[in-house]
Amino acid sequence: MSALWDTAEADPGAAEHAASLDYMVAQAPSVPPTTFVDWSTFWDRDRKADDWTFDEVLARGRGHALYAGHKTGKSLLMLYISAVVALRPGNVVVYLDYEMGEDDLHERLVDMGYGPADDLSRLRYALLPSLPPLDTPEGAKALDELLDAVQAQYPDDHLTVIIDTTGRAVQGDEDKADTIRSFYRWTGIGLKRRGATWARLDHAGKDATKGQRGTSAKGDDVDVVWRVERDDTGLTLRRDASRMSWVPERVAFVRLDDPLRYVRAAVAWPAGTADCATDLAALGVPLDASSTAALAALRNANRSRRKAVVLAALKYRKDGA
Image 1: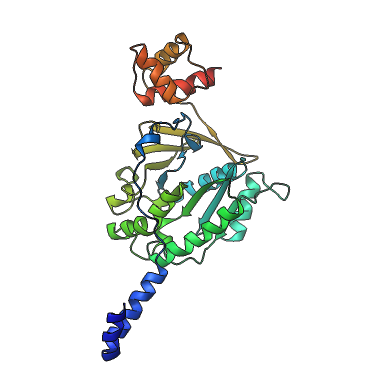
Image 2: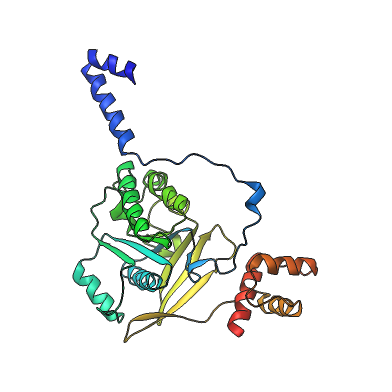
């Protein structure tokens, strides 16, 4: 850096450029060293069947996009999910709400039956947060510091982060690919490194069936994309895309009142689920077996199935029990 500053002394423009570079370096989030997969231990971890933070909606340690048309109710559903998760032992939720005020939040929580007697301390709710844009290094660094403080307070809890909504959390045009790529480069990948479960809420285009508003890059930075649709009884989440085979194609909720809540509607089981469950029972596979153990038992008996079917069969047996 000394050569650069020597040049800067003779050229004021170079001094300004050098100061700008120093500022960018200071503001950028720290990047952990690159590590490689340790194959000697890679296969030892038992991959559980129920790998969810919120059953069949938020996959544990994964990134999600939920989008819907105007006033569909995606934010209300996500607030309900966040409160449920935060009240479960071993979880802490950071909710960045760029749209509602305190009165709006109070009204919704009261409608859900919450009040002073409920311990919502692990629902770390930020109303109209003052963070810099999350598609910039400054925004990523500020969010990192915020999440570091939360995780220092709850070091043993799994972290879930909700960003509501994308367009208000970034400085670039939210329908442009470069904005979404910058968001992932600075913020999304940091959340993934933490092992956090995270979701960003977004708006649909004029035709919701054609995807999120704007760029197709909005499906590239996450592991699961849900399209939220309103129906006569509640909401349905339809899977637009997923990196994992075990994410269901459709998750339906019935909305109930007094208190306001979302209850799962009928489950759609993949073809072959019942037969696979019968095979698992015949082979003596325990009800609480992991997907790894179930897949191995079927393979050894020459009754192999797709992992998605095996995961469904494990849940099918538990529900039946």
